[in-house]
Image 1 (spheres, rainbow, N blue to C red):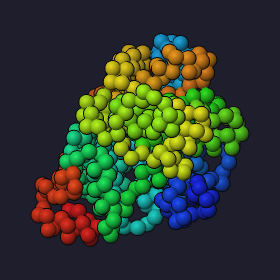
Image 2: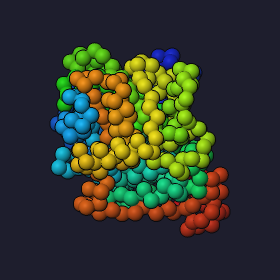
Image 3: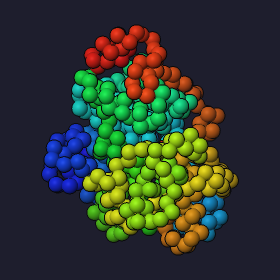
Image 4: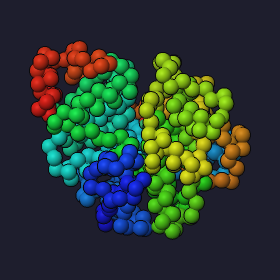
Length: 426
Ligand SMILES: *Cc1c(COP(=O)(O)O)cnc(C)c1O
């Protein structure tokens, strides 16, 4: 139980347990578990999937996704086997992720591994909001050292339902998400700080993979199709990897689910790269566009997703015969309205992008009425959470410009640089 090795997806060589890179190539690393069968454990939340999480112990925190069979949306779209995975807050259905997105599926196992590494580093996380919230919520309960780097425009998304830990620091960057990532990488280069690794972090991927595990246990099979809104595409890779494990188990079928991954056009780099790979014309996308300010949601706008890297999004798409979708603002608005009316819960704008892709697929017959479909509602229930939970704002301790120059903070610039080197930021 809880036994695994980490292996390079390109050269196949075994790697150290906490490695993020193979020394010989750029490929993603993946886990291989000793346990071949998925046996739900009598443990709380996400730790139900303990055997297929890269941990050797567990913090007493971490919720799991829920799966249910749709009647409302499925009837509307003429799909007879539509299942919904919901990661968010919806107590009536047993969904208890209070920061309201599936990023908590990543933060809990990652924080557990930080404890196992037994180093004293500060974990650095760059985020457009949902990831930062998920890590801050867990860190509020484990008191681990955490540094969040968030674009200023996304600071409105920064809240948690617990008392903020004194070990959590927030840096707001006056720039976009990519600039926040670059700045976080600079910090990670200083002693005393460690990056969480994004898509390279196997705890993040296997944590997200629990969406497919939970669904397979509920449906008793691997679904034919999987729909998700993507930014980095990590959720798509995770689903592919989890489905591969389920096939190895033997009780859930032998076919991988077709990945249907969606982005909001025109700022949709994954959609564009996928179209370019197929020489497709008419793919509206602009990687460097400033149009992101006009988008239905910018939370899934990642300028440098792990697309072509071995073990990345392109590999997951081609292994599953997958499809990328471009969704307009208008389609997203309609999808959001339809979902809220038929399923009766509010959803994250990113999740509406996945619903819109499902609507496209149902109307142009890319999926058949009897196919089994899993729709991943990656975030939702924020309105519901605000009724029930205490919402504590997470304000910035330090503000920097897009190149990481200090602009505003509690201490002088000198001190900030000095302290940064010592592994502390305040
Ligand atoms: C992060 C996020 C996504 C996209 O996730 P990937 O990392 O690209 O798989 C989708 N929806 C919500 C709500 C998110 O927070």
